[in-house]
Image (cartoon, rainbow, N blue to C red; front, side, top):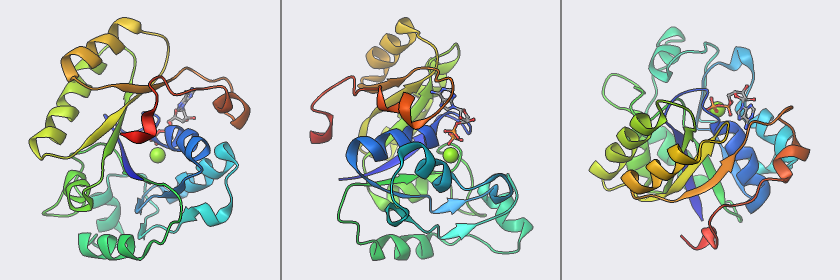
Length: 209
Ligand SMILES: Nc1ncnc2c1ncn2[C@@H]1O[C@H](COP(=O)(O)OP(=O)(O)O)[C@@H](O)[C@H]1O
Ligand SMILES: [Mg+2]
């Protein structure tokens, strides 16, 4: 199974969630657009946190130095992002295991003058996992993202909630968003493989979705 991992924001926990899923599903990982190379690759974080092999990391289609929105990072290097190139790279992936594709930022970040991240999600046609915060403000961000996905008939595999315990917010997301929260990643201190190992799926059998 292949999933697109998006989030309600940047810095929300997409990469850590991917690391957890890579471990849980023995999945391959692909970050088609990696900006902020100056701050490291998400793939390297996934590898360190999941202890996957290098062969489970699929090279990005685009890499940019600046920690900016993809369209700005691409413009800074005069290398515009083309959806077709990403889709072509995607078609070449011969992953024998599940595949996780991590977006950049949230759903409506621009990739170029015409297209947004959600256009890539739609073109890939994969079920999406939305990573959200647990804390105040998350209900609005989560429901807005879910509405954007549904507006384009993008299938939804579920939500991963990251952060301190907040059962009321998780319940509100499930009820008002009509979605299942497949996992809650609590605050990990430190964020490391051993701590991630202890986290279980909240709803099973999730992989049948
Ligand atoms: N469950 C967690 N507990 C503690 N820190 C976390 C957790 N999840 C993510 N973080 C931290 O939050 C920051 C952003 O997480 P990351 O997964 O890189 O977000 P994104 O990929 O959405 O930009 C990182 O410093 C990461 O270590
Ligand atoms: Mg990331």
